[in-house]
Image (cartoon, rainbow, N blue to C red; front, top):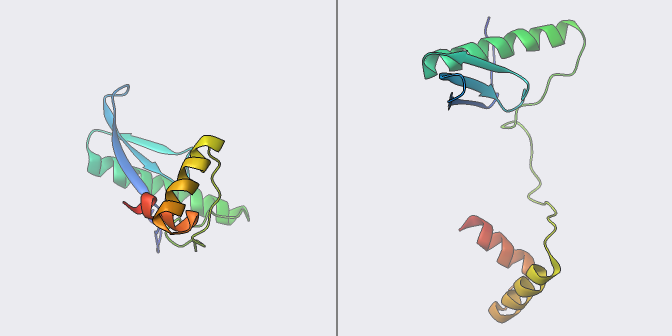
Length: 109
């Protein structure tokens, strides 16, 4: 079974504990698939996700939206220690830019 329009986010990594490749799907963190090769791990996790999505549809459950399809506002809040906030505010003032602009530049470097 395969999804007609599969836009989920997959990753294949090595499991030292299992001595096999493991296929993962970010939108379904409880699912995984072990296989001898990376290709088989990817094929396995994609098949498993397709089966789970079909079961969810059949049960009237909400299926997770793919991360790629989500719209992002470009805004998020992060808490830092007061000393870091002060240091960044001073650095922004010295550079004659806003704190948001300074942090955005640092995140994209």
